[in-house]
Length: 124
Image (cartoon, rainbow, N blue to C red):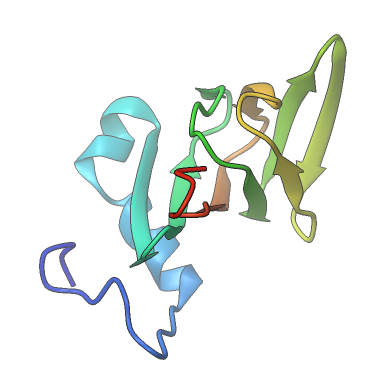
């Protein structure tokens, strides 16, 4: 299903992450840059994005105005907070505020779920 014809919101959405990941890894953008994402859910201030990143590719620092989570469903990531470096992998979730996790890098081929939700009334 293309991004133009698939539902991004609804009362009940289900995703087969394995097939979504395979599709993303087959896209031209992934072949060119080693990184591609697809928004799975967009409902009000809530966003859930599936991103695949090739080993060694820098994700950088995410500059959204709201806190977020990163959850690797495959692979491992390294990130920095201040002067300390950390790693997370499958089965772990990283929560951080805007700009707090920096220098995010895929240590191996990685698929992750990025969740962002903000309070629409305050713009946070």
